[in-house]
Image (cartoon, rainbow, N blue to C red; front, side, top):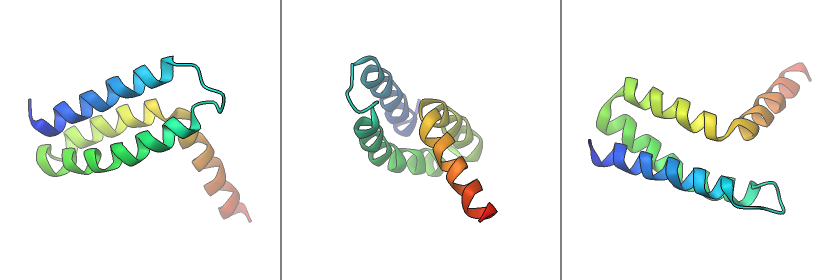
Length: 82
């Protein structure tokens, strides 16, 4: 396993641990931290392991960020609709 995939797996484990801990703000602060940490790792995976592995890791990231992705899609839809 490459270092980039190892880092991505560690990121997913960290996300699962942070999701299990109680939060007063519905985990938004933790989500922001995970986004800042996860973006370079995701780029690293794409560069080191190729597009197909990168797409699989992207699906894993989207499954972790279900609600932020949903809010982003609703916002984009509102911007397009006017």
